[in-house]
Length: 563
Image (cartoon, rainbow, N blue to C red; front, side, top):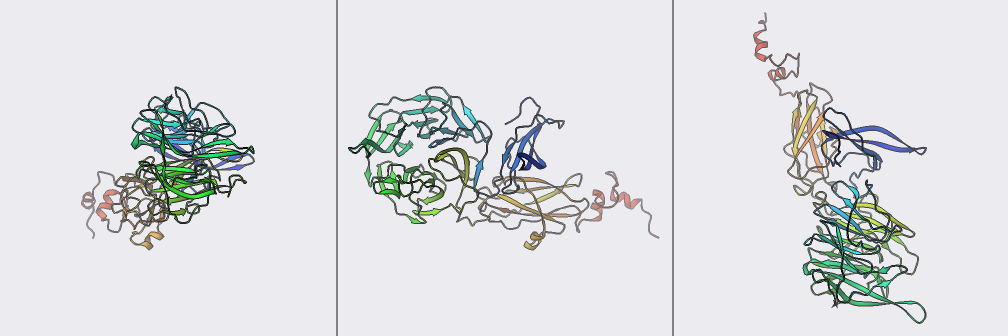
């Protein structure tokens, strides 16, 4: 965040490696990057798996620094897919079964509901502009804790939430005022667990038809032997967003019996909902169903590929860009009554090809620990950058609840074979002090000229870099930032090892899948073999520095003819 109380001319971003020794922290090699007046910066080129201490200090126009920020510990993402985010600000307490909702206009991710050992009426949000946690002041009746459904409503600039007791709340995103509705009609039945109500299995916002839909209700009753019986209700319950009325609707088709501890995701672009796993009468399931919200018709789907294990208490979201479902975690034990076996497996289901794939060992980085009741949220392309991401927050692994936040970069991990486009306009200019080269070029894309690439491999030599062999022998130049969007002008200043020498530059662009572009054109600065003696003398590149007023002509005029 921008500093106050100082005439800020820019910021210095300090970073250093850190290691623990005898309970203390020994820091080494403190470095900094002058980031100007930017308040966000991607530090690139750090060592994988190392821990860095990072802080920021503002400075004024005389170079005097103001008070530095608190430091934080980070682990570089390098080219990994999973990344745990350690963010400043008030972190939400550990909780299971929370909901994450994105406000794409204000770039805020709200944490709603969930079961926690800390009872508080506080709304937490993750600010995607500053990457800080913050508390959002609210008015009106605050929803109770516990499992919930929550959805963003673009048309009303609001968040709808169905609380654990099936009370419907609405959060106005401009005023952050909560409204609790007392709807007409008969609400869906809810079962009661040990201490709190249990919501139906499925809930989603059907924005096209102005309603919330719930499915998978069940009624708990005690039988003659004192055991609990679960009676499934094979109906949909609809809450009208304008009428505030509950209605009962018939389910048609092959209505799933897996309505307990299952997972559901709705894909708006296809207007389809998908249900996977859960507990059925015959045991734990690995079946997948598709729902048509218009007709409320359920249909079981065929499945190919690497099938996931049967599971309960897992989480599922959608990847709109690649039309696939992402499934994470859950309990993969064979029975809900046995000892739980939590997992952190990551699976994807392609809704166009009906094919499952196991991404657990494909993605890189360290994933969240095995758990259940985790909140997932997809951040579409353009929310942060050109990539799509999935956030995970919270969860439960008996007896612990979590409040850790992870980010997974989403793309087609197996099929990306298209390299970035070749840079053809690399240019280099010598600085006035002849100690630096100013490089410019046009940013290519991730796949050709589409999307945003992952990084640059820039190299230099004292001979022209025209072939792959030349490039392999050239020395690397660290580029401490990610490529800009395609078509943007990149600008980099490189310190030259020595003056009065020629240096040649060339680069390749690479993407997140390790595809490299073709070698760029070669740009040079300094004295080259083609440089004329006249120009060299006028630049002062060779010989004595004769001054700006001295010209080649005056040298010739003031030189006696040779005897």
